[in-house]
Image 1 (cartoon, one colour):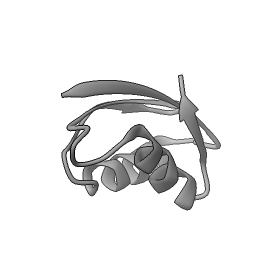
Image 2 (cartoon, one colour):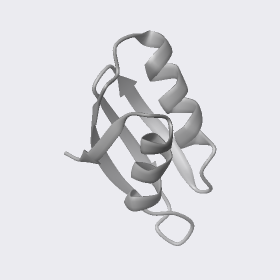
Image 3 (spheres, one colour):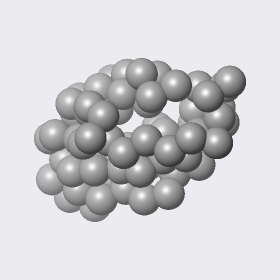
Length: 68
């Protein structure tokens, strides 16, 4: 397992954090450690997914994610 910290712009509330958490949990091989307004920490199996896939999943929700 690897861990990635994401910086997420555009989140304003707990509802936003919940949407991001749900999207990240839907990716294969991920374990969401923490999602706060503006950031996320996720452990993942690099054979099943990647940080780039997580960034894409968050961006699809209308937020802007990047590795922190």
